[in-house]
Length: 334
Image (cartoon, rainbow, N blue to C red):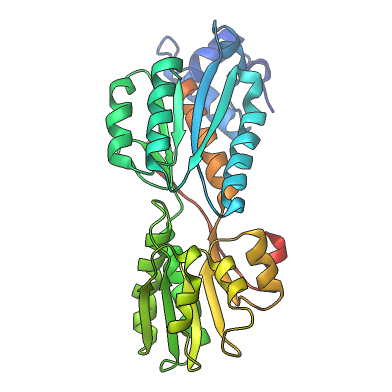
């Protein structure tokens, strides 16, 4: 990576002049500034934050409030993304502390968020907001001195968020199911409830698309406390059902239905876990649609670092995570 000293030598100017140009100073001739900025861009110069960050009297600390899901792959990949970014940035007096709370317990997240803000006064937070209205109420008094990035849900138009687009993932799953079945084949859609993050959007997206492709849909059938009452699925899983979609607990449902489901039942879902991967390889699940999870934690961490050290100078207010379609042939790549 090229340095300011090397830029200065190439242009025959002092390093101080180069630094002024790169830092946006007006105390430099416009034509000289333009030459420096042009060459810096051509040679891929990247500002080194280390010099200024070492001068800080204390570390910059960010707290990441992560939703602990039943899907262990989601939580572990978000954490891996955060830790990956933090590892790259640890030399810059920058540290991210991870706080996990139950995805089904919004109050646990709110209580821990409020306590951390009062006791620790962090430089920033990354949060998957389970109740975005109450989260905003808690963080509002700290916004002047604290940077915020959200994952999964947008808090406001001015707060940067990493957008997994669960609704679109649901539509893609619907498109796959629609192409696996004939338009008149019976499809059972199970509503596993709202996990405060993705499952409702998955279902809404799936249903909107599948309605355009299939005229024989049973559901969405809502079963309260689905994990404890999976037997109720059998009331709807008649021999003429050719396809099954569920927005939650797919791996547990597939395991339960192993010897109970109709032959050649096509199952499509959203999300990925170790068990779903195994079920796809065993051809128990036909396909799943998932968002790039590691990327969400990584991008959120890199962005909040930039906010803290560079300021809120970027116009971009969101980042759309990639969507992947997984079949038996490619599931081992994820």
